[in-house]
Length: 59
Figure 1: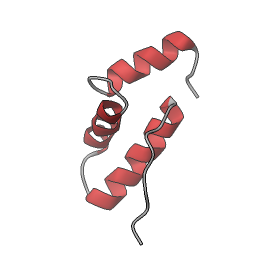
Figure 2: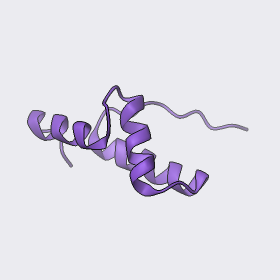
Figure 3: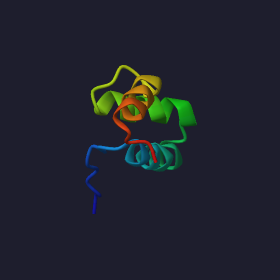
């Protein structure tokens, strides 16, 4: 059965999803972080990190 992935809403969720993606696909960690960040509507991981830092949603 295929597990459905939901789009994360926190930086912690983004990191967790990226870690899982890296294990499942063998891509690099930064590639996985960027891919998940794009799913969340950000240009890349760094943009997501800045956003969550500004709103106080980091770890």
